[in-house]
Structure formats: structure tokens, C-alpha cells
Image 1 (cartoon, rainbow, N blue to C red):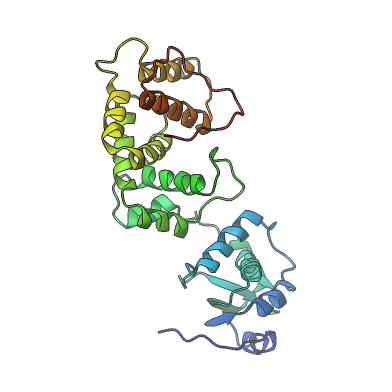
Image 2 (spheres, rainbow, N blue to C red; image 1 turned 45 degrees about the horizontal axis):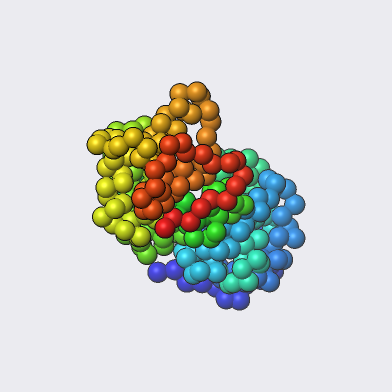
Length: 282
């Protein structure tokens, strides 16, 4: 069981640091974070998106002690952890964190040399099927829920936010399975977009959604002029022409096709003007 030291000041930390390297758990208040950042004199460029990501997790109560530490040199300089400290000041939350003190300044050169664990890695550790695809879909569903229908917003979801989406919508696992199966049969639309569209369409009409994705995969028994045939022809043509299509364009095609099917309309040719709004599925 860890014990948080509250309150803790720079003077307390400096006194302990002289004894050499040590690790402890400290409740870092917004005030202490601000004071520590005054000693952040030699570090990488700040990434505002990372600060926003961390701050959202802190505000949501999703931040947990995971062994990653704020690292301070023997002279008190911040060697690692500036993004977490900025996030504490942004969120205005007091957060319990490991702090390693008393490190030689030159050790900073060896920090953060590993690869960050992705959301897909986390879902794989949880033994989720189709973990990479499932992670990609949850990120795009999160974006859609934030009003970002082009999946190009400034903010991207944290792993905790993706897990929260999956917890709220366990049916996303089925969407990932259908996306993988459809992609294997018709490899011209990204799985991430297929899964996101399946999630949205399934919430409207599960039976018609199941039929829609079966016919998207195999194109079987569809009459001339059917919207799904227009979709299959359009994306196949653009992919064969080596056109690099953005995800929002795929999404617009899928929604326009779905809406035409729902309306019972024929669709000889599928179009979507670049930069135009992504329609609502209905």
C-alpha cells in the first residue's frame, strides 16, 4: 500500500534529494506542479495535445498510479514529467504520483527511450479479440461523439477514454468482428471506418445493418442501380486508381449509401464533394 505525503514542498523535496536517489508517492497539487515547472529548464518541446489528453483523464478521475514517475535531479530540475505537471495545472486537480528524486542530471539522456503502449496494446493485454481494430474503432467513435466527423480533430482520445467508450458500448466488439469480416471479403474500405459505420447503423436498425454489411461484403443478388453496388464500384475504382482517400470520405460514402438503402432509392453513381458536411445516418 502506498502512502501519499501531503503537503509536500520544494524545500521538502530538496532536503530529501541530497541523500541520493529515492522513490516516493507525493500528492502533487496544482500549486506544487506550478512551482516544479519553474525548474523545468531543460526538456523537450511541450506537446499541448498530450497535456490536454492527460488533463481530461485527471478531470474524469481516470488517472491512476501506474509506476511512471516524475523525475527530479539532485539540483531539483525536472528531468521527466513536464506534461503531467502541466496537466495537473490545467485540470486543477491534486494527483498522487510517484516521484523519483536525487537523480544525476545526465540521466535525462536515457529517459523515455521505449515505445509508448498503444490502446491496441492495452486491449490486447485484456485479451480482447481484434484488439487493434477495436482500438481504432473506439477512437473514431469517441471522435464522432465529440462532433468530429472527419476524425481530424486537434484532440485524440486517451486509452482511458477509449476503454470508457468500450465499457459504455460493449457492442463495439461485434462491430470490430463485422468490420474484420467485411474487410476480408471486400478489401477496399478501412476496417476502422467499417466498424464505426456498423456501430452507428446498428444503433438505428440492427436487422437492416446486418443485411447491409453482408451485401457490402459479397455484392450478391443486388439489382442494377442498387446503392451498395454504387458504393462497391466507387471505392474499387478510386482504390485501383491509387487515389489516397481520407477516412471521412469513406465515411460519407457509407452513410450516403446507407441512407439511400433506407429510403429505397436507386443510386447509379455515388459522389461526395470534398470538404462538404458528413451526413447523418438515418
